[in-house]
Length: 237
Image (cartoon, rainbow, N blue to C red):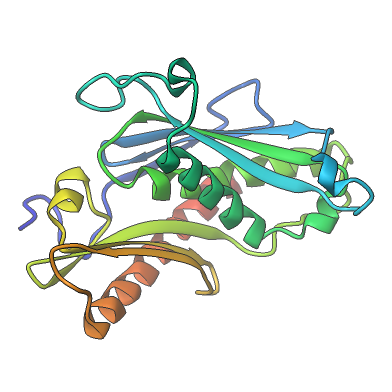
């Protein structure tokens, strides 16, 4: 049982915009003890396979720094390849951001989002998506200000959150210890209008019932609404 927050309560969320002065858009997002730096960079060299299609692109790179966890992990560049987990997460971030972006309005520009985990305590991919959206929006605002694009290609806000089932109770926003002990855990990527972008769910100790899933979806939507309110407050400044 949680000691410092209710089972349907988010961790303390803090988003610091424009954290990196050299990036077109950036923020540091803190979800409890999980901290992720998100930087958005503009590249006028779109992928070769997009040539002649009159649209832009959004892609993401994700990584965990060596002491983001209790034990030092090796840099993947030293190992010579990315892990399957890293590749899966950065593809998820890219898919999520593209789902709420009209790429034709981003014509001839590629936005690269770098998500670097400075400190990990569960929910790094969901924090990365939530922070990446803020970094992307700040980057888009700069492109409009510089008259490089005519209008905002972002169709609606988006965020991500984790949920889990522990001893048949539904928990929102799991930290590492909770995620480790969860019978069922899931990540939800949801838009401002409650459209489902992606759901990743794993049942290990116990198979997930329909009731458990519906409970997770219900509290995930509540958490997403709160996260998007925080995003909007930050972006309005």
